[in-house]
Image (cartoon, rainbow, N blue to C red; front, side, top):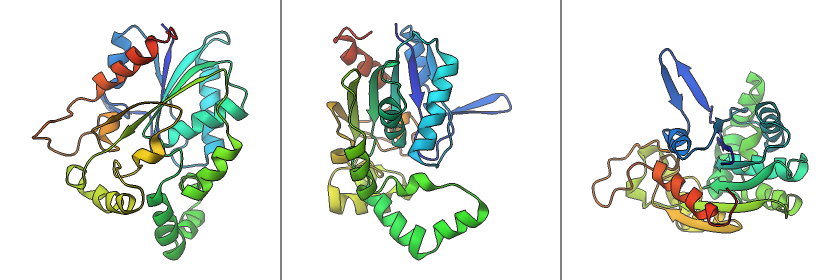
Length: 251
């Protein structure tokens, strides 16, 4: 079984130990994959810096945790998918990565990121404030639709790596309250979405499925009570990902 790397997205922090309790970004997903026989590593990179910086930190962790001859599978959530694509193409890691699976990654950017940059970052001075405080939030600008258009032109998929994607979508009334504004903004411009990323933007290369989940539920953090046709625990969906790519004799 190839090892699996779980790589977090924007504002993620990997696994955090709080006393006797471990707060997991990929909640319960690591355990489900371990039960299948995979060694699982959960990464921790800068939560909101540039893709290039995060990709460099990702490479460093992989290089220290795995032997040079080991090939791995990366499952990356949200912005983490862009980090992994950058690392594979620009940091000479194509020989180490057998497959990349992106989970609701904004490959074509997010119109909500466009809105945040325009209104919160520039107009209200958010970026100036963060700069004054010495907080690196370059990653936010890199999730706009224009920035991702440039990124895709410069970061082609490597032919030695297999790329898969999963998108997510939920109606507006089944996302957390703090996601309703972003859901509406994205829906008006891009259609179906998970309150952060549209289905259209998340589809990349070999698209496996659109999951009935919001952006946070996609990593098993559930903030909405599901009554009718509940998605429930998302961990089994990750196991199905492995079933899908297992059929290609990758693992």
